[in-house]
Length: 125
Image (spheres, one colour):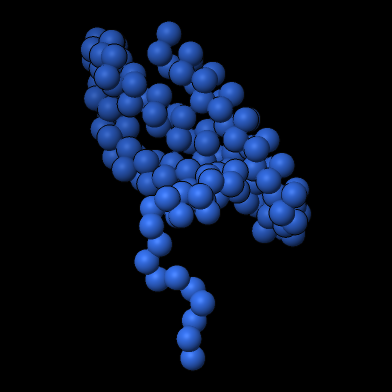
């Protein structure tokens, strides 16, 4: 039996298929989960070093690179949380139609973007 599914898609076709807000939100949700998984040991190590004394706290968080890593971690948590709530609604059977799923994905992306910008201001300044 011959399948109609293409085996080797060119990159341009893969990108055109995955350019909907639903696909973008899903892919970025997975990426944020991987980023969180990889940064948890680093953030625990930084926390351990920063809690040794008040001087070590200032030494750790005076570094711009460390604050940038902390922002990446907080931004990934914010994004992963917002998209996780969106997925919980979908698991409950809400917003499963294509039109409402697109709308909820766009709203979730906007909320996540606002949280990411707010976390940048909070961590970096």
